[in-house]
Image 1 (tube, rainbow, N blue to C red):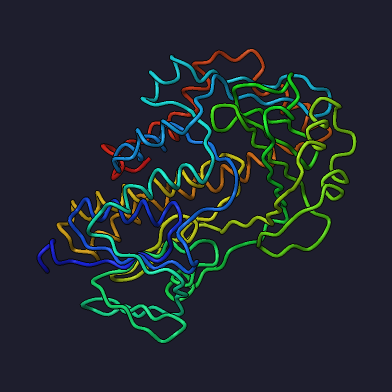
Image 2 (tube, helix red, strand yellow):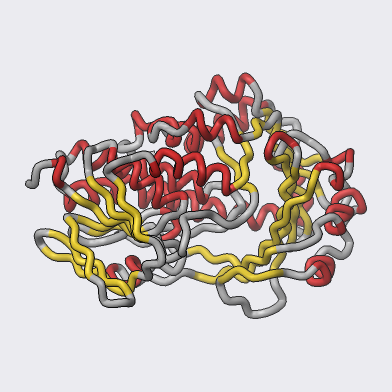
Length: 399
């Protein structure tokens, strides 16, 4: 085994997962070459939600305080029925929640969480960046890896971690499994506080569950803005990707929705449209000195707000596995996969089921609205322990 100080890993992708992976590796005194296809390191999108498990991971990476300074800590998580505007469930995320799970529930702009990690990455002397680099191939050898870009440049290192998203080249070239287009479309927008209806300015992710559709809103940047996300089952055949959206399309999928949530659909001045994808879980994420992380490994839909959280967990677990394996990348990557594959598979499957619950109609809607009626907060906390109870200290244990 090479001396740890001289080991080098190529990280493909400069999103939240890639930056987190780079930090986790340098904390093991490993040099990182980060390859990003965009001209600049950055993040697109609007808001995301961060559970206590995400903050545990951010703390382990040394960027928890930076993220906390940019986040909005919520008082509740609320689900409403979008047809009759009645409350379905409310989970308190205050002091008792934080005491139970060791961390807060928060909402944050995606660019702000990315920046909180990027600031640390920029000041890390062990990390080298190469932008405008489109990876085309990877070759895994007994003593290292070679990554080839579309210009024919070859980058060599001891190992490679693919953090290159849903259409991951590293995933395609190693395990070959493909993503699955769900047919669910997500529209995202940001609304300034002065344009946000007063009765909806709630310090919580507030989800309005409707038939084959739902919408969510929550505050960002100290309440100066509100994130709005609407989701519906498309009537058309979709391809995974992002483009500008139209208000007319949104309105066409939200007929019959109560006036209180429906008023939100008139507020954005522009929309971005995502055709979503996930992937069926697989039993391997790589081979030899190659593995994958985040959306490259386990793309998932947004129904449990865990995509970024799982990528952060992945990164910390990868670092811990390398530490336990004393720098043997092949052994470390298989250890990492042995705990992350079952956990993320559970989240993927749970997310699919949660989407069904959100979008229930008819009798299913009636049953959904009774599921959590009169349940104490302890019931919700116990049911969420498997998800939010993740810690750096237990990350190599099956959960």
